[in-house]
Length: 332
Ligand code: DGY
Image 1 (tube, helix red, strand yellow):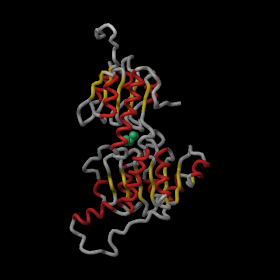
Image 2 (cartoon, protein in one colour):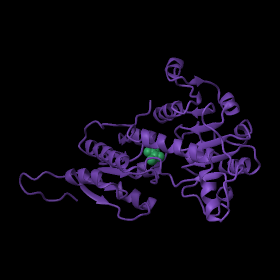
Image 3 (cartoon, helix red, strand yellow):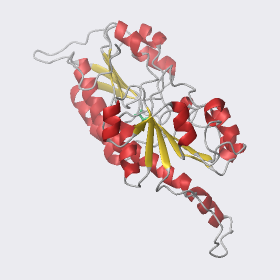
Image 4 (cartoon, helix red, strand yellow):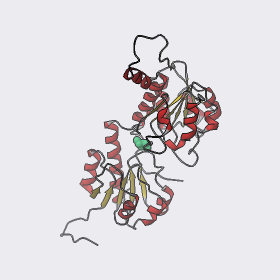
């Protein structure tokens, strides 16, 4: 129902913000829109989102919200924009939205360094067995300086294989260069000159898996990459190799990874993302001392999350006022 406005008063767009995002972004949204902000820690139920999109002009979503074809079909004709506070948008049926003329926004670029830092933190932590060291102390095993205890892998001279040479993959390569690592990448769409300039050797997935001491995943989740690392690929890796995943959990077949680490097919894994999320407390991966798992905190620095929130707010505001989004996702 149309609200009655006083003379000169302008009708503000209505939006639904599916989580309490950092204040920097929320303030911008509240200044420009009539916003309903979901107040709970847990994401709103899918059915509630389906109801909200029947009447709001814009939706600010997170990667926990399932924005599928059914939800898009349920949206009213007034829905102009879905602005995701993340660079990844595998939870959104972008094609369905595009077909209905609904703009999709995301937050690329601002989380590149934070995510690359975390990938590198995982690499170092797994290589030098930090979690096992912490556990060693807590279990009272530290009795003396032991010349043979907790020996890990070196980075200098070791080979890092980067799968996906987008912004984050390249930022990880930059960090690895500072550690004098040899760099391989599997990234079919990257021109050789671009990789050469960064001293990265492009190669096939098979060669990368065979030759790398550390393999780090930096591809988006889509039909091509879902399950791209399973038994077959893990078997190609060195028995000492460590797999690092800061991209999306379903890129790796979780059961296959568990069996590969358990059976010594590979040396270990360090994961910021799992399948499903959150990982179940009885997931066998949590029983392995050489598997380090974090709760999807790649972008979780204060500055980065503020930037993501303001960028998502700017996309939302542009969309509801029918302006081009500063960062729009577009499919060819
Ligand atoms: C993203 O932006 O896609 C990250 O996974 C969230 O930090």
